[in-house]
Image (tube, rainbow, N blue to C red; front, side, top):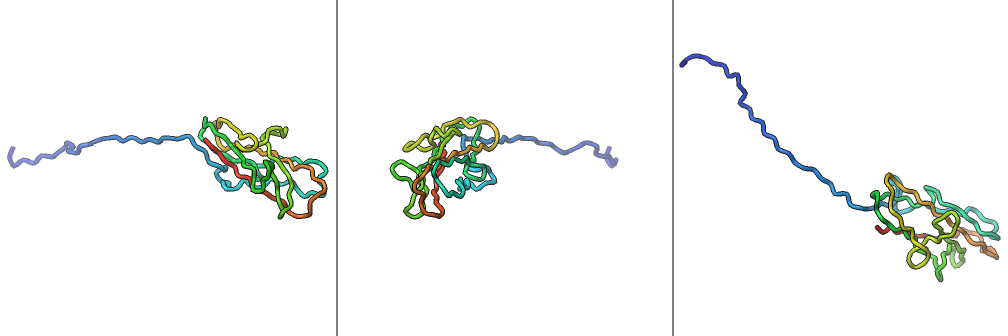
Length: 165
């Protein structure tokens, strides 16, 4: 009817929908360090203060003192190698103070049987990374007996950890 008022009670809105996809590709990989630790240093393995080296001195690393902290994708096959150190000579590891040396060795096991090394000296550790979090791998160190005892002072070395996956 012309001239009659009418109220619009219907909805003139249109609703359109569409979707999008999200994806992430997780690649096998590893990170040195425990997330909050400095990945460039695992601290120091300390043989302590020695007045005599008439017998070998054996120590095990701790989480902040030489243990290798590692995070990897679960199931990642990897190899962990330790080089011979900055003061190595003739296939042996040495801590040095100037030209003086103290011979030591690093091991994978608490029985001090498997020398931890690389393809050139010792045995790399091969493993498949387990599920869950950070793995802390202890390093077992032996400082060999020495007679006569070298002069007093701090003897040190730097060993590089390499993870290949």
